Each structure stands twice: as C-alpha cells, then as structure tokens.
Length: 239
Image 1 (cartoon, rainbow, N blue to C red):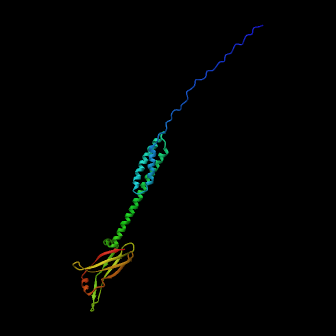
Image 2 (image 1 turned 30 degrees about the horizontal axis):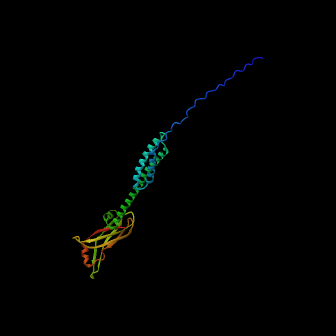
Image 3 (image 1 turned 60 degrees about the horizontal axis):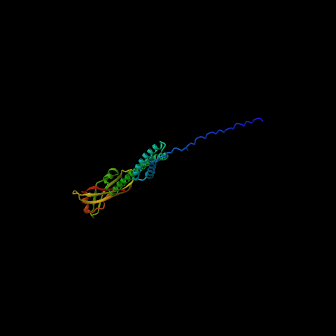
C-alpha cells in the first residue's frame, strides 16, 4: 500500500487594514464683521431726506446728509474689502444723502425766492399806502400827476354877491387810471392860512386832464384876503 502524502496546509494571507485616520475638522470660519458706518450713514440719510424740505429744519438736515454721505462712503470702502457686509446699504446711504443735499439746496432757493417776493409785495403795498394817505405827495407830483394852478380872480357886486374862482388843472402822467385828491391852501404873506379847497378827479386816465374851479364859495370879507394870498399844494393822495 502506497503511502499517501497529505497536501501541504495552505496558510491564508491577511491584508493589513489601513491605520485609522483622525476625523477631518473643518477650519474655523471667520464671521464677517459688522459695517456700522454703512448702517449709521443709511439712517442719517433717511432722516435727512425726510427733513430736507422743511424750512429752517432743513439746515439741520443738510448737516445730517453730509455726515450720512461720509459714513456711506466709509461703509462702501469697508464692504469692498470682502469681509464686511452691507455694501448695498452703504451705496443707498450715499444716494439718499446726495438727494437730501440737493433737496435742501433747492428748497432753500425756493423759500428765499418766495420771501423776496413777499418782501417786495409788502414794500409795494407800503408805497401804495403812503400814496393813499398823502405821505408820498412829492413822489406823486414828480412821477404821476401834474397840477397847474392858475390865478385867482373874484368880484363882488353891489349886493355883496361874490363870484370867484381859482382855475386848477390835473393831468395824469401815470400809465394807468387813478383817482387823485389834491388839497390846496391859500396863505397870506405871514404864512397864515386864509382858505383851503380840494380838487378830486375820479379815475383819471393816462394822459387825461381835468379842470376845476376852486375857492368859489367866498365871502366878501375873504375876497380881499384871497386876492393877495399865495396858493400852494398841501397834500396829494392817489387811489
């Protein structure tokens, strides 16, 4: 019997396992820093826009707009570096600040023009009032009205009836119709008033003239005084 040889025992080769790797830890991320100038500039610019059209207060609004503009520019510069947010907010602050500044300048120009117009109207109203009250007599006689005073004449009959009159002519030199009230007095050589009368022309048109006879109601006692008197303009009113 032949000897059986046992098959050589095969040994199983084992592949070594890879060494365990430590867990991957993500590097810490740096949170973006805030952008306080952009936020503050936006708030100030908003307030400036709301106040820019209010008289007097808009002076304060102009200062806020300038500060908001500066802060908006600083915020935009910081945001451009990439680690600060609110770039859009900073740009909005700049735009609003510019709008507020333009609004302040425009509104102040408008209010200044309105004040000038009101002041001019008040001055004109004051001048008209002076002409109504007779305080601008010299100006009226220079620019608006010509007053021609003739020679006084009067007679008295055997019954003591006096017929007298002082011819006066008013000519309107103004470019529109006015009513004129002319106060004329008669004074003697010592400057004492011996009589007075008024010539009133209603709605005298440009270039028109109107004639009057004043001092027609004279007594016999006053006739001699008026013949030697000097007639002069006391006051002229224009309506």
